[in-house]
Length: 172
Image 1: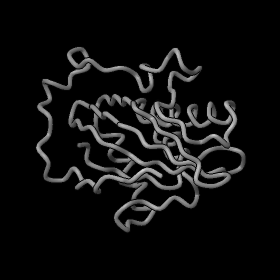
Image 2 (image 1 turned 45 degrees about the vertical axis):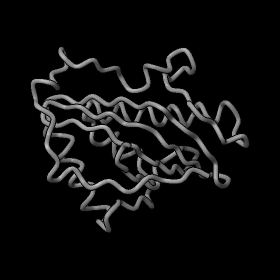
Image 3 (image 1 turned 60 degrees about the horizontal axis):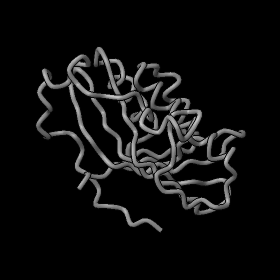
Image 4 (image 1 turned 90 degrees about the vertical axis):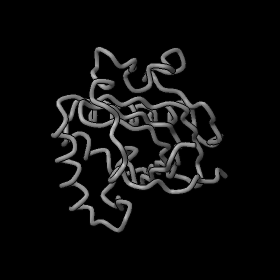
């Protein structure tokens, strides 16, 4: 079982990355998962795969879910982005799901562009119908940029993988 790093402080109070370093024509960014293009039809692949109980087709569905989630975020498609979350999703920090959704709507709409890169994916399957993915996420926009480690718990809901829990940790 993977041991989580210490929880990250929220971005509040952190020094933002200078905007001139974030312009898309200057930043060396890749669309989410491009670095694994040869490993999967989705462009993502698992750097570490501990989910020996899942079929290759099921793992591909998980990768497709993560790719679509990142793409919805990049294209600022709020409806599609929120649709990737489970009905039982519980936000970090004790926030209600409704308050979290309102905050996400604002945060997705504010920047004029967003770029997401997902790397170093690690998969485990603690129980049937549940998976946990650890990954490095690099977020860039015209207003902010950061690099974090995320733990994303996915659950089966009506045949689809949905995000049940999402935790962010400091990299390091």
